[in-house]
Length: 200
Image (spheres, rainbow, N blue to C red):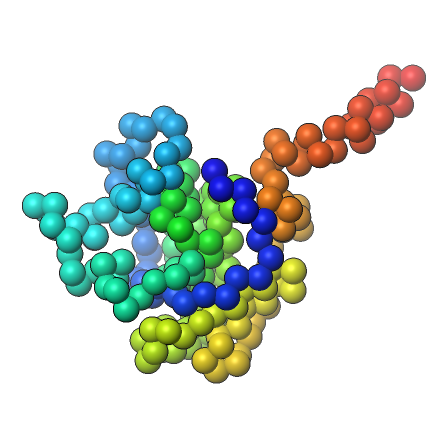
């Protein structure tokens, strides 16, 4: 798991304006037999059934195979990550290299899985989401800035910004490159001091 500290990301985007993208579409169930997280394996199979034709050849019509679109930000339609709770879906998104997913609504479990895997889910209004799609399609080199400290997302093409919400604990972990275990270890002295005081 890449535990890169998250601060401000400015990147081009990959547009995927489909609603109700579920976790089986993100990573098909046949890939869930893997019990260890190998980022390249899951990243290579992100949206597998959309990226490849039945004969294994590339589907040239799918956005991940379009050389015009790339970057660390995936901009997706409403209700992203619905369906099963498989964490493998977040593994695949992170393994592909996305640091941010933008949508107007996320399924709760998938949203938390993304946060646990150092991917930032950014919830925006449907109006702002549509503006992002319009800007990206008008110019694939359009950049978006995601500022975690300020909790803002800015469309560099228009200058428009929105504020997004994030759990304070998860924000702290992302900004410091900490998973849950790292967080506990970083507070080991405080925990031991409290336990000692509680036992007196």
